Image 1 (cartoon, rainbow, N blue to C red):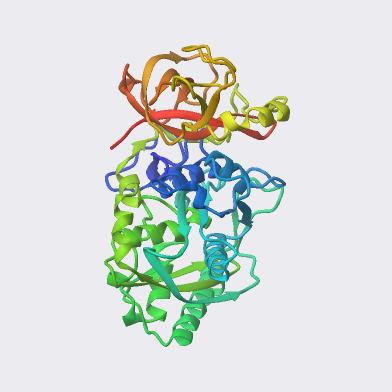
Image 2: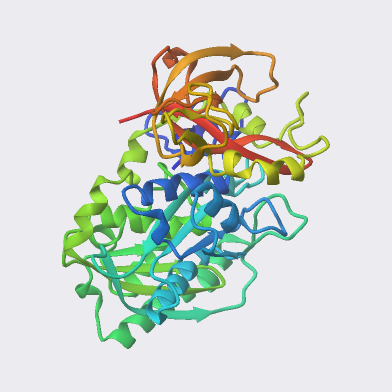
Length: 463
């Protein structure tokens, strides 16, 4: 979940201020998108786990910037996974997140993979000042699917497919479109969700009373309550909080992120019902095991809900999304060099440095000669992205054309010794100081010709 929040009452501009308790939505920073949020979620998911054990990466989203280029391969490279990892994107439906989960579970059951990383991430854009803009949010969720001491198992699932034009975006559309609300809720959402949940209950022989909690995708809180009542669930006590007014609808990542929130609050032995909607619907019965306690050490929904900073105003949000006229067009320009990107991808995307085999000195970028012991061509590559560091120097640049000046530029020393010239993100100039502990975040450096150019930035280490 990105750190920034936009007050719902401020949407519309003109200096509008939100009243007390007016609600907010999560907003990706100007250098974040569905890929960078996916990497952040996956980094925390894999914390303490041998990355060499990951056999596959499935990425679900409706807002990936490329029309012909795989996101899962970018994410796998940023995570520094094995080169023979299987990767695939599941797109074009709000149901893509749970579709990816089921595909990963089937792969592990079939024996074609030991562990599969599933990431759902979305950063959807609605027309400025529209109703959808207030209900949307940005975020990502990551799950590692495998066998053994797992935190949860899937007992049953039921899927239905349906053709309806309710929420959509064509190749030429920049903004998500929606048909009339009553049509969407009655003929799309409610009908499909009720059919999917009742189909699961009938197939499994379970009833609503057998579940401790229902995790239901919903376009709004009222529609969710209708589905709960129609399927026998108690809306006030048995349904997972939808986090409207705190997070917002995160598209393909919405149901997976609500599942994370439910798992954080679940006790061993409890049973969850997860239901997701989009071009049909699907429902899964999930058993929580005694190993769920291992998830409580992760940076889940609770940690991210508490880590927040308010966006200054609505115009800043529009500027972040390039939705208003500006003297800085971040989508124009010649574009990045594919040759340089290919040559430097181990350093730029996987964020690897060199470690001298003779004296242990770490350095970045790759060098042929160790500046400490002068050994030549005797290095091993080491991953820097999962380490911490500290600021050695910094400057505030007000002339760099950033949509949120000043641009904070630093010389950061990674734990172990490598010094890296990095921009800082998700930080206020007031908190920047020498020796500040930092961690690293995969972000967009800039965007030329519509092509995002990713690299790593540092961000203050938050407990």
